[in-house]
Amino acid sequence: AQSVTQPDIHITVSEGASLELRCNYSYGATPYLFWYVQSPGQGLQLLLKYFSGDTLVQGIKGFEAEFKRSQSSFNLRKPSVHWSDAAEYFCAVAQSGGYQKVTFGTGTKLQVIP
Amino acid sequence: KAGVTQTPRYLIKTRGQQVTLSCSPISGHRSVSWYQQTPGQGLQFLFEYFSETQRNKGNFPGRFSGRQFSNSRSEMNVSTLELGDSALYLCASSPGTGSGEQYFGPGTRLTVT
Picture (cartoon, one colour):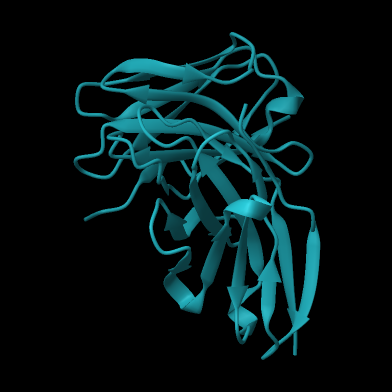
């Protein structure tokens, strides 16, 4: 069965600093991978997705993520964090091809300090 | 395109009552999934409907049910509410054609007293 691990429950960074959120997945073949962001009391917004091809994918709001098959990882990065990036971030995996059941990680809460 | 809409946004119910939540997906999307989100359990998958058929179901008791209409709108119903059902219920729509990406509504905040 597919699974997703986000090892960091809570991360605090200073505004302007770089950010990396970790995501490890377990899946037998090449998965579809996603990062979502959720502001308090809101739904989830899709930041970026990886299906195939270039392992470095660009998303909205200046985020990017790199797929590393050898490490089963799909870490989210941003070079310079803004206060408005404070939110909860979810990594998700879906099986490629056919019907996809999407599995979400437990989320990482990002706090941004001035 | 309009996004995913969920109604109502907030709901307060009493234990033992039942509740129906509604979700209208993005136009053209045929798949609707429902999730329950709580601080303790995180985001948990309830079920997914595609073209009016339930395609997959999470590990929830039979008190949780859903349906999808021919226009892809979906409803979920929770009967005999328990305090533990208090949660944010999220609906997500997708084309259903194999990409796996989902677009979420703002959620319905259900409080059971």
